[in-house]
Length: 521
Image (cartoon, rainbow, N blue to C red; front, side):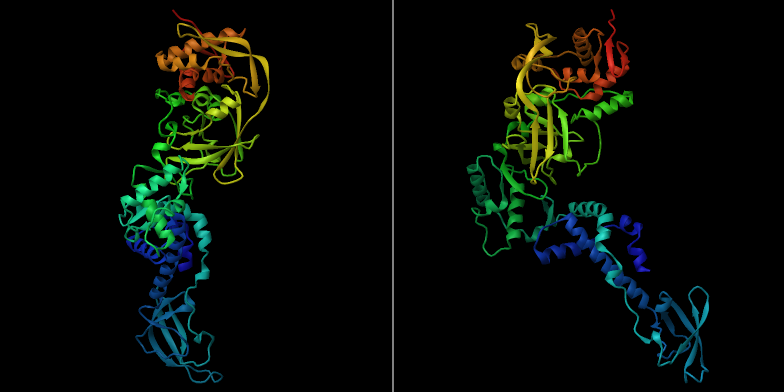
């Protein structure tokens, strides 16, 4: 039955987008003159596939024979279709008069059915329940919404792939439209758009705001005009689309912060080869909780997650950024295509609003340098990140308090460029992670280490353990402390560090991820 076909898992998972489907979707976009996302097109595709399959099955059911109705007359050799028997086909092999005084005159048909069976049927019978025309397949046999919920994502990817291979259709911010319907947007229009964005001083603007000054032909469908301008802006290197998914915002590329266009020095990572199999379960668990954007952790975004608290490391503190780790990523806006996304950061205490940028391709959020300074944060400070009340907003909060002096590990850079750790009293004004906290009296001195530090990674780790172990009677260092300390002088994710600690004999595990250095000649 067609209903069994169209609700089967195999049909919707194995279905291929063919040329006929593409032409139908093209025509749909032509007729409606409205750009649509792949998700919106999926519902159109499902409805059309159901209709086409219903029509095809109905044609096949009714082809090659006469539909059996008891009131009709038949002859030997007639091909007959039986709706009440699941649209089986058969051939009349004999016709004889029927005998039943209560009914009156009628005929009895002997029919050879497909499959080799033979059955008797009444014909030339004026009164019978089956004399009404058979009901065709109805739309209400299927729940298109349920099909989309179950198979929508798979179908979206297939439509996207089919459209990407088709030069006759174009995409902007996740929406598709036939190229032939685009309005001509010339250099003059684009120069006007540049002037408008220049006046905005780097503040992104929606396409609707640009259209007020970019004089496109009157009387054109507004959605078509907006899509056409979007397409022209996308093809011009002066402009950058920075809106979150579902929203189109334009900015001049030259007015974007340099730290958004280029990875800041403190976040630059020179990959270190390592064997991930060397990480034990404890190390993998710690890696997941360190929220490092460079960690090779793959997890599905959790749309229900409302907040995450992270411990700040020096590279992000100095660059004014936050990591887009596996946990944090779901709290920030994303985009269909744009590598950079403009959004708003909101201070959870003061409610102050700040411009923020998601650098999707590099895995960090930029825009917090002045906020870090204002809150007097340090490596190890705790930052709470919450989903905003409005789309395109993210709330951040440092748990600050009146500054008090407390004993804390302090980073001292010697005249020779060497780094020393000492327990000193320093002013503290925000809650912190004990294992990751370091006071840095001179940021400029540490900055020089990033420009001149050429030590091999293994030697750097050994030197750090040697210096940090002097601060504890046991003479050992926890892997989490070491990770935070290493990142004060070099950007390194947890996994290469943990793998090195596990594989070299000079680093001895003394329990619970604490390591000590065995000095060798």
